[in-house]
Length: 84
Ligand SMILES: [Zn+2]
Image 1 (cartoon, rainbow, N blue to C red):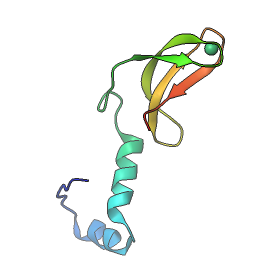
Image 2 (image 1 turned 60 degrees about the horizontal axis):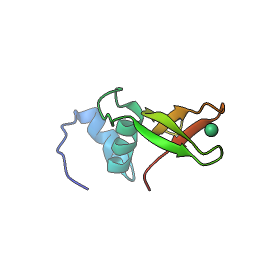
Image 3 (image 1 turned 180 degrees about the vertical axis):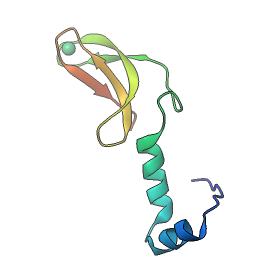
């Protein structure tokens, strides 16, 4: 983790003070609302184990706010992959 100073107005300061974990909330909002292309990762080929073919996947946001490589396999499946 790294630190970044932010400036709040009196009202937003009061709201932030009342939150149990303001930093975690800011991190979540940033990850959910980041503009496309801000954190971009190059396309990569991922192996779809089910049908044993390679899929060209792009770095995309998922519904839960996280990012993963997502690609359409020729077998019809949507293949997602992320680093653990
Ligand atoms: Zn497939």
